[in-house]
Length: 149
Image 1 (cartoon, rainbow, N blue to C red):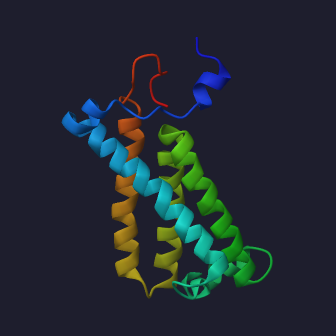
Image 2: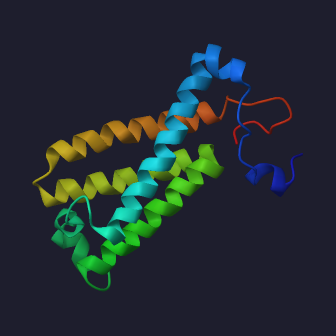
Image 3: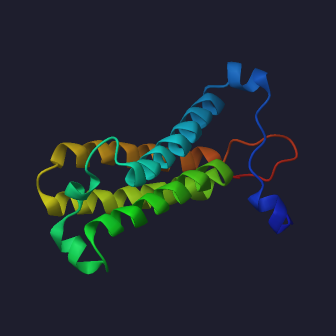
């Protein structure tokens, strides 16, 4: 039985031969890198506000449910996105499902808002990618590494 430390240890970088020859390993690492970097960058931008005015993407019904202002809600969203990206980097099997669930919430918010169906559809595609990452993480292992981490 694996210890807790073994379970939370990130996967070591695969042997270069695996990455060069195994499409499953290649797909896993492409998704893992993408779902680590993108949520962290989007999360950081919730604080910097360089890409867009994030508050306009918050449905009034959701805004009325959360305490504080829309800006404060977006800062909380940014924090969660950063944590989700780190979770994918450290525990891709869990992190993939976490990002998928988070994207599901974003999709519901966008559908409630009613103006961003195109973004909701794009996020549905990302949700499928996050689920794929979680499933690939269950089978991509290296010798001596607990399965699915």
